[in-house]
Image (cartoon, rainbow, N blue to C red; front, side, top):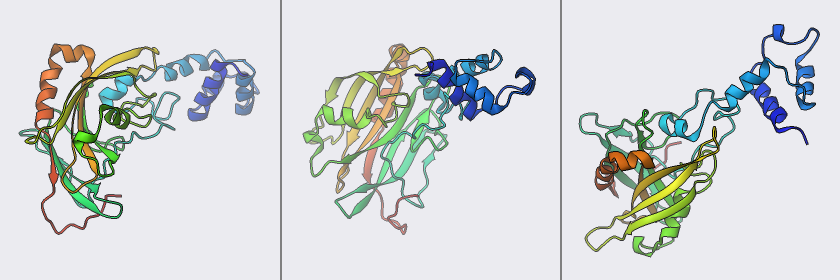
Length: 282
C-alpha cells in the first residue's frame, strides 16, 4: 500500500497547483512529480504546503463559520456532502429575521400523507443573524463562538403522535451520518440527559442532549450540548425540530440560558392561507 502521507499529498496536488517550477528539479513534469509522490519521494517545498492544507480546518471552525478557508483542499468542503436537515422551504415564501427583535419566520412544506402536503409556518427568536450560503437551510449562528440554532424536519412518522416517538427516534434523526453535526463523521457519546414529554396543553417535546464531535486537526472529541424542541403540526406527518447548541464549556458559562430562551420561543403551526402555490423551493 502507498504511504498515507504520499496519498494525502497526491490528493492535495490534484486540488491545488503544485509549488512553483523553480522548486522542482530541472526537467521534471507534473506527471513525474505525482509519480514520485506515489513512490514516496516528497519534494521538500510541497510538503509544508500540504501539511498546512491538511490542518486548515477542524469541526470547531466549521461550526463557527459554516465554511472553510480552503474550500477545495484536502480539508475543505470540496467532495463533502451538504448536511441534510430535512427542511423544504415553500416556493415564493421568504425566509426572514427581524433585526429589531430577532424574530425568525420560515414557511416550510411538510408531508400530510403519501401524496399530499401542508404549509407550516415555523417561528423562533434568535440573538444571532441568519446564516447564508449553500450549507444552510434555516439556521442562525454566532460566527465568533460557534453557538447556533437550526431548524430540522424528520422523516414521515407514519401516523404516530409526538407522545409515541421515543428518544431513540430523535437521536437517529438528528445524529445520522448526514446530519448537521456529522461533517467529519457522526457524533459520538450521544446521550439524551433530560426529556420532557408534551402535555395536553403543550404539544411540544423538549430534550437536553450531550454529544461529542470530531476535531479533524487534532483527532480529539469535542464535547457539545444541545437543547431540542419538537412538535408535529396539525395535519402533518413529520416532526419539526429546533436544535440549539454550544460547546460544553460555553454552555456552563451562560449559553444555556440564552438557548433556553430561543427554545421557548419556538412555534410551528399551519401557515395562513395565501395565493402562493403549495410547491417546494427548488
